[in-house]
Length: 259
Ligand code: FPP
Image 1 (cartoon, protein in one colour):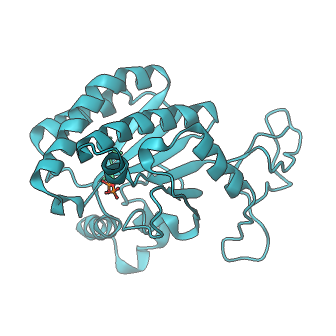
Image 2 (cartoon, rainbow, N blue to C red):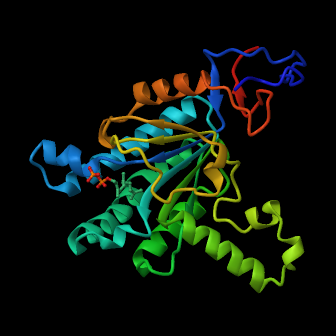
């Protein structure tokens, strides 16, 4: 993964590849390990999720500081409904608390919030809360935080196909780009760096389409412990990868902070 030598910065100088300062344009994170974090401390799992919100806010700020324009996080999967009712309801309650506690501050910091996922199944209260978060931040552009909630990669591909069919798109015109425009994350470029915390080595139905060429980074760090240092470690690892997107030449896909 290196900068294209033809690319130039705003003052017209060629961008010099600098592996100490190459940052991804889009980071996606599976925030796993809240439950284990709490279990290790003999605390209820809900406390792990509360700390998970703190880690999320920390990470959003760290991304803003590093000039990363897109962050997408997996907050609630289509499969998480299988959890005990009490845990599901605590997670839903946490949405309301997180929105009322943090959205205004994140808005002031230039963060735009977008929710990706199936909103039909969530309660009216949660829907209203997401609506508030999206409208309060809709004019921001420093960092777009996409929160995947009641989301699954397979759901996303199916809903995109259904909407394209409903629009009458002829089969021959259903190209990758056309289908991509119906996907829930069509407002963002594909993720460059895909992080999963909590030690599991799988992508768990997150961004199946979009992560086709993402660099994968797995860490044992439990999500509530994630912060600046862990993000920097992931970025440093990413900066050492050579991305070819199926070709033979290294390709540019990230932001160089070099001159
Ligand atoms: C996985 O940990 C985490 C989740 C299912 C929830 C993620 C949610 C947050 C981090 C809070 C952010 C939420 C909002 C409202 C934006 P786990 O419970 O599977 O942990 P375990 O694998 O250790 O059991």
